[in-house]
Length: 137
Image 1 (cartoon, one colour):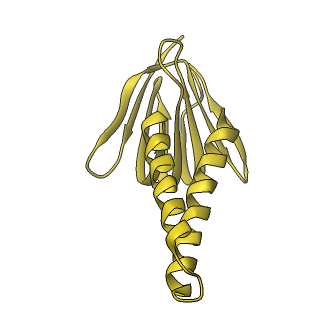
Image 2: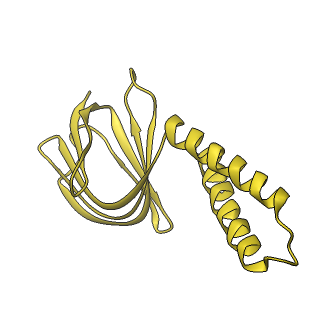
């Protein structure tokens, strides 16, 4: 059984389709919403949203803030801050990571410690994204 899922940000429609179910993960627990789920309104904070539909690739979003409402087999999610984890995002992250590695190879740490630390922090951030995406698979 399918139900309608609409995901909006301030200025974009991020997803609009019928789905089998969605799953939300957070440090406080897990929530799965299937067809005929009880009506619910839920504040989202630091959640991972997993969208499942048989004929599309899995979709993942990291939602730092948002609002979810399920009623009459329609799920609406308003997202304030998010990261969409997909193949395009991962390719961009890998490209940025390679650029940073190349810059780090050329830098002399003793001459420019601030720039070195800045690039190392960026590299750590990108590696965290990649690790997170690998854990989702």
